[in-house]
Every structure is written in structure tokens, then in C-alpha cells.
Image (cartoon, rainbow, N blue to C red; front, side):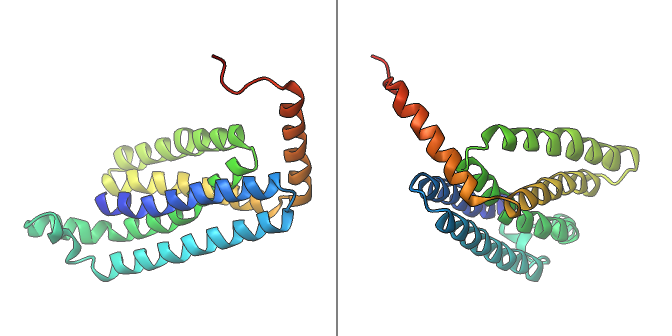
Length: 188
């Protein structure tokens, strides 16, 4: 899990970059730049995730020795490494697209997708596979992978269907509403 967490931090950085870049481009009235930023950040994060997954799979028989001396643990880690590799790849895409969605102002949508995919799909599937079908950690991890995969697919479809010109209009409308209110952001 330490390896997963470290690789996830790379994607979180791309999440923040995509969110800021897309929102800035939309606010500046540049729909094409917002779309290109989305493609570039997603592609770079995905390629890094694939590289990380290949490294994990290449070193699956020895990677655990960075954390333990136990051959039993090393064998279990090698057995679970494909799950880790899939998780790394999905986590190379999903956070970036979540950042794009937040940059577009779809925070509520992202929250509903997160809740639905993890708590309605991922955890129940993981529970059933892990405990009802006695798959243990593999079952639990499979459920979480399915939840993440579902979230990734939803975000990919929504992003591909995005009309960037309309997103610029929506962004401009939100900026106009804020400017008309003339309320200070922070009240003293």
C-alpha cells in the first residue's frame, strides 16, 4: 500500500494541475486550451502510471523486501502485485479527470460519482467477494478496483462528451454573477 500511496501522489499533483489549468483556461475564454490541457495532463499521468505499474510487475518478487524479510509476505505481495498494478493505472487516470471536472465547476457531480462508485459499488462488491466468496484481500481489492474502474469510465465518458465552448459560457456566467454581487470574499 505504501507503493500505491506514493504513486497516487503523482496523480494527485496532476489532479491539482488539471483543475487549476482547466479552470483558468475556461475563465480566460479559451475552450481549446482547456481541452488540450485535459488531454495532456491525462496522457502524461497515464503514461507515468503505466511505467510505475510495469516496474511493480517487474519487481513483484523482490519489491516487498524493501519492507520485510519474510518470504511468506514476499510471496503474498507477488501474488497481489497485479491488483496493485491495475490500481496504479486506474489511479493514473481517475484523479486527473476528477481535477478536470472540478476545474469545470462540477464538484457536486464528482462527489456523487465518488460516493456511488465507492460506497454503492466498490465496497459491497469487495465485501461479497472478500467474505462471502472467501477471496480475502483479492476479493476486497477486486471490489475497490471495480468501483475505481466505474468511476474512471464515467469520468472519461463525461470528459469526452464535454462541449468546451459551453463550459466557457458557463464559466463566464459564474464570473458575471460573482462580479454583480460585489460581496467581499472574506467578511471582517
